[in-house]
Length: 137
Image (cartoon, rainbow, N blue to C red; front, side, top):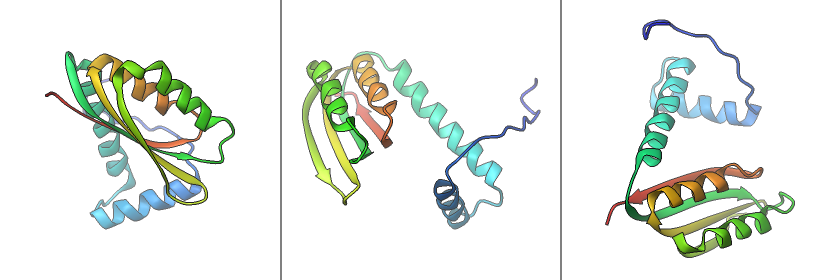
């Protein structure tokens, strides 16, 4: 397939997420959902490439929002943080509402270790969103 060819795909998305996505893409001025999805996919690829290819030491923060009611998730997230204790400087837990919590984790260390920590957190069921910001000192 050449770069100018287009592939059609089918994906499953929760209705609430799709409505929110459509609302935001309309506000941003997108004329089509396809273009918005393409841009979101490109952003994910760009960010993950940067994080995956990053070498050396870095400092930064991981922010994640998760479902407080997801059975065993809080303990799982704590266990993961203990496993990566050499990369974690501090963490802060904020109750957003009855269902959602925000965890902010300050990190310092090898970029590869921080990337592994973020990926381990991101793949847990009940983690709704995660953002990694890492900079080189």
